[in-house]
Amino acid sequence: MGTLDPTIAIMVSFCFLGVMLYKRVNLGITLNATALLLALLSLPWAQIPLIIYGTVDYTTSDGLLAISVVLATFGIMLLSQLYKETGEITRLSESLSRIVKNPKIVLSVLPAIIGFLPVAGGALISAPLVDAEADKLKLKQEKKAYVNLWFRHTIFPVYPLSQVLIITAALTATTVPMIILRQIPAAIVMIVIGYSIGFWKTSQNAKEKAKTKSEKNPDLEVFFVSFSPILATIIAAIGLELVGFELAKQGFDVLIATIIGIIVLIAIAKPNLKILAIPLRNKGIYGVTLAAYGAFFLRNTMSAMGISQIFQALRTNGNVDIILFLTLIPAILGFLTGSASGGVAISVSILAGILSSFSPKTAAMVYISAYLGYVIAPTHLCFTFTADYFKCSIGKVYKYVIPSFLATFATAVLVYFLF
Image (cartoon, rainbow, N blue to C red; front, side):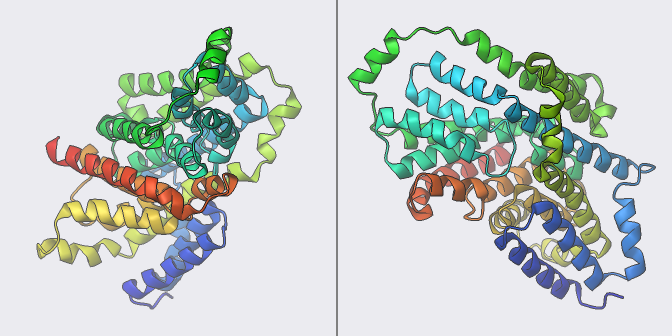
């Protein structure tokens, strides 16, 4: 039977979490192992199987929501891997680089397009493309790394198929579109600040301009065909959200939309059975899917042990304003864990007792805070892979990342107060 004080149990579990993340253990294993350790330390052991099963109990609304999010996560990862294995993502990015003649725009859009593939360390996929385009502007290595890292992540605050966004909506009992609406200003600032910092005092040389002007542009159809599965998925998700609120509330809108996207991708790429089977042998798919379950398991464990009561005292005493809870806790957790989903899952568990309920306003603040903390974390795989690829230190990239973070974070806080 768990006998430790909740505060001590949390400290021990979070230290364990930090070690697991430092050792690069799969996030799915890490979140579930942390939740299990926390339960063993703080709860009666007979209660633990009930929490494990209750997390995906299809007879309850919370369990049904968890099941739909887990399945949707698996579907999104399957769609991402099929995009890669069929070569459609390569056709998509290469056709764009030939359609758009301005290397600054290409550098802004390419990493974001690759960002549609929500895979760990995915910035490494776009790095070679960014490297080639950035040479036209004679960017320094740390600038290349910044552009690749930052623009890859501009899409996720408003991308309805982001697993973290889906999990945030599920854990806070809000909807994805309502959160996205509040993220639009932050996403715009991310793009503007990235463009301003990334391409400050740069210009394309005359030879490259002449070269690109002489090239033909036959790739528009290729681009739209390759982009159609993603577009179909997004349209289906938004459409189902608008016409079926109950469906969206249970999380099945994204699941159905993802299935539609997979069908469209198979229809245009016509992969054989061998290619279709490759993603199913990829351990990464199952790791991310397990992480989705782990987010709910950790939330339920922390709820069962009454973790929110520890922080509720600070709130009721009036010593700390709620905005500090909504910003600092998710941002710090996102940064320390190097995981946006981990930061959100833990933050929501802590804040559940402080807030009477989550609104789109508070849910959006939790999401963007955890997300931005994760983006700039040195343990963030995209960050480390990008710095390694461009052979520059993380410290040199930080001189561009930190101002970008502060500008975007300030925008999110301003939106919170104004709307």
